[in-house]
Each structure stands twice: as C-alpha cells, then as structure tokens.
Amino acid sequence: MRMSGDDRWARLEDDEAVRAAAERLDQFSSFPSEKLARERYLASLDPGPGDRVLEVGAGTGDISLDIARRVAPDGAVTALDPSAGLLRHAREHARRDGLEDRIETVVGDARALPWTEARFDRAFDHWVLLHVDSPAAVIEELKRVVRPGGRIVCVEVDWETLVVHPGDPRVTRRVVRANVERQLDGRMGRQLASLLRGCGFSDVEVVPIVDVESEAASPGWLEFLETRIPVAEEAGVSRRALEKWWGGIRAAAARGDYFFSLTQFAVSASVPAHS
Image 1 (cartoon, one colour):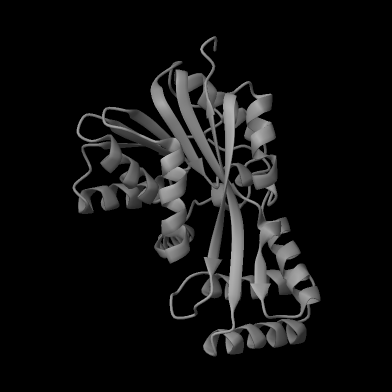
Image 2 (cartoon, helix red, strand yellow):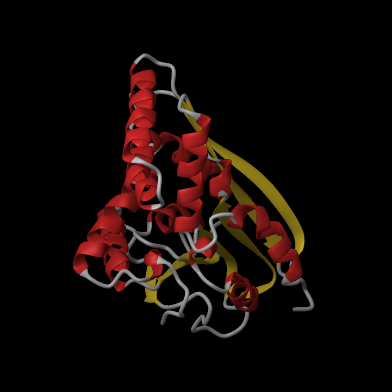
C-alpha cells in the first residue's frame, strides 16, 4: 500500500531497483560511523528479553536483526516495509544469522498498520519519515499499536547538517541543497521532537548523533558524496564546478586532510498511560 507524494524509496517495484536499494542499504549499514550510531539509537530504544518490537521501514532487516538479538530468548521482532523485494533480503539475512524464528516480515504501509491496539512493547523507525507525505500518520499508528507505557524511537537525518572539508563552500551548499530537495522532506530531523509531542507522546527525549568520517581508508561517506554529483548536476550545478569540487575532496582525502559529518536525531518517547 502506497500513497501519492512518496519518494523513490517507497516505489521499489522492479528487481533492478530492489537490488540497487539493497546494495545501498547494506553498504550504509557497514559504514563505521553508522555502526557507532546504531549502538546509540538502540540504547535509546532499550529492547530487552521478551519484548515484542516493531520496526517500520525495515528494508533489508539489519537493524531488526540487532533488535532480535537483544530480545532473545523469548522476544520477537516484526519487520514491516512496503517493498516485498527488500523483505526477501531481510529473510535471507535472518536465515544467515540463525534468527529466522525470531523475525516476522510483513509487507505494508506504516500509515495503516495491520494490527490491533497495544500489540507491541516498542516500535522503531530509521530514516522513514523523510520519505512519506504524511509523517504524522506514521507516528499516530505507532502510538496506536504500542501498549501504554511502551516506547518508540524514531531516527531521522537532517540533510542540511551535512558538512564536508575541503571544497568551495558555494558548491558544497548547492550540492547539499540538491540532496535535501531530492528527499520528500530532507529536513525531517529538526521536526521530529515537535512531531512526537504534537501526536501526544510523553517523555520526549532527543539524542543528536553525529556521523563523522575523516579517513578515506574506511569506505563510507566519501563514496556517498560521489553519488551526489549527478544529483547536483541534475539540479543545475555545472559539471566543471562539480569536477573541481570533487577533485579537491578526493585529493584531500588521499593526503589525510578530509572531513565529513552528518547529524541524525534519535527521538524517543513514551505512549501515555491514558492512550
């Protein structure tokens, strides 16, 4: 189930699109900075043995697998995603790690969850709300299916926090802007706490997580930056300016004078007892 206005991540229909998305998600999960970030946002979720946990927008299931390990031996994880193709990868990963009995995969839309009230103890999403046209509907659904007193954690990036050194700041700003506008709402991170409060959650807490990369030897955000070149060119930045910008960054990385950072926000909240 999909709704109008969703961006490309909600429209993964053909095999090639699924394959490319799965590769991108698996690559992102392997970034050293993202591995550190995951420890922090799962600490906010704090899943424990026996918990029933829902992840929406689970993709290839790497985060669901981490949660499944934390809720063992009696807990369970439900991984929901609109893409049946990505969930096939999630099941393969679960079998690989011997966790297939602890993870259920469900094709569906987070704005219309197929469960009754108070089904789960905790719920989680990572970089989902920036891709949908009605993020409040997702939050309301999470509130509905998590028991009173239960906890949710939403993690969203704010693409305007992207920082890179070196590079002409004027070109960097245009590259960042092109990337922000490529998302349905690339500034979701800054809105998340207000969104949860507005949906009636209590105990809203914000943990800023800054992904930092300063060594080209470890693959990660440097490779991601290169993929933004055609995005920026499509948005009107000249190829000549982009080639000069990227050449300077690559040269700096080779000599150890490169820096990248990006901030995502893990916002946790409790479902009020009166819900």
